[in-house]
Image (cartoon, rainbow, N blue to C red; front, side, top):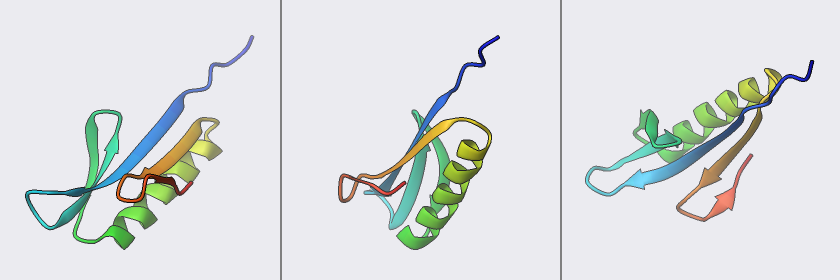
Length: 69
């Protein structure tokens, strides 16, 4: 039996209407943060947890268009 592996992609972006950072998982808000550093720390931790559970995970920073995990 082959287990299927889910692919998880997180996006970090600055909210234009308010001074905050949002982490998105697919089209849903995963978290809302006052600064980018906290958003990065939380989402990288979540991506590591997903990877440890056997999922392929990526974190992308939309302000720089760079993959950070």
